[in-house]
Image 1 (cartoon, rainbow, N blue to C red):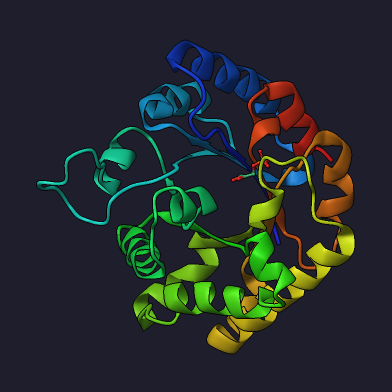
Image 2: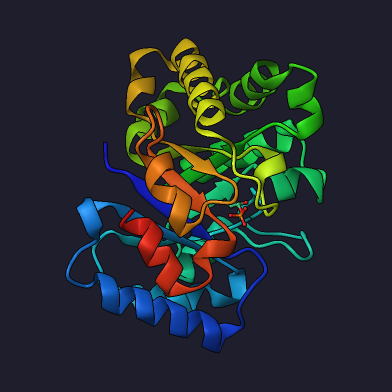
Length: 254
Ligand code: 13P
């Protein structure tokens, strides 16, 4: 399966900075991505159009939004719709990121609504899951992943399920490894990704084999190579180390 290396810029970069980084990526990747990997940049809303314009026409380099609200339009002050994301050039949507769950109190139910809505609107959706340190230490890794995956995927009807192979990815991001410099060790990543694959198989049957499961949490150029080669690790979701084109490109080629 094609490996996906995704950049999550979070709340970084004003437009000139975003444009410059995107242009550097476009220039480096216009002859093709390393190993035909797919690069995705999840940019802030205000940067989406600038980034999409800068990378337009570069194969295997796509753009997405970090958040959205699952309605067509209406009185939802401060929110942005998938149609607005599409208009700005985004084709991916991120759902369930731990910062949305934990800082903005997004519930499993809202994450589920957003995931279904994004798929329904024809986007590629990357659903993030992951446990807190407390949950891990209490032995609840499996339960947490099971709940987060099941609430978002089980309600999808047959039409949406049929879209999953082309339009869906999971990102396993242990909350304790995000922005902390603490990368999960190979044994922990292997185990969590296998648990994730098994839960997906339980929900979706054989179709689960084709769904990419990315790892995220303190991915850097020096640990990316070891992580990407682990079983059931089909990509990486990179925060801090994706902000500079140079380090993101190193990870893309790791
Ligand atoms: P860091 O790579 O900065 O730890 O962030 C990971 C993340 O949350 C990506 O979505």
